[in-house]
Length: 93
Image (cartoon, rainbow, N blue to C red; front, top):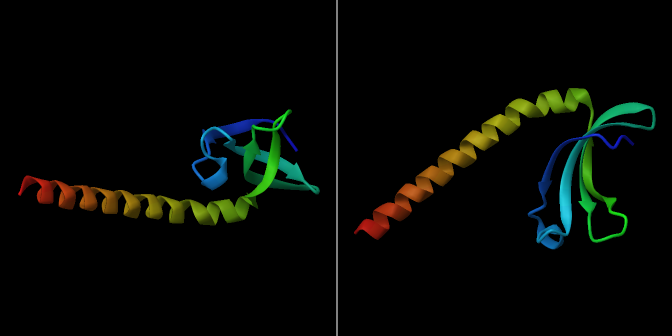
């Protein structure tokens, strides 16, 4: 697997939050195929190692997923904005 990390962010999920795990997005070759790999790295271990918590996508899967993720993000932002408006209306009363 390649060690070139394209994106990195602290994990917010369960046992991996609080600095125990880092999400890494990489382009890897695995079993002779090219993959997009999004995986949690356990930083508590010495040396840190990748966990089985993650996914591998083919290029085609990632291309199919992109517009869906964009729509999900837009929907989540709309919901958050709506919820914030409702909260501010209730506190203003």
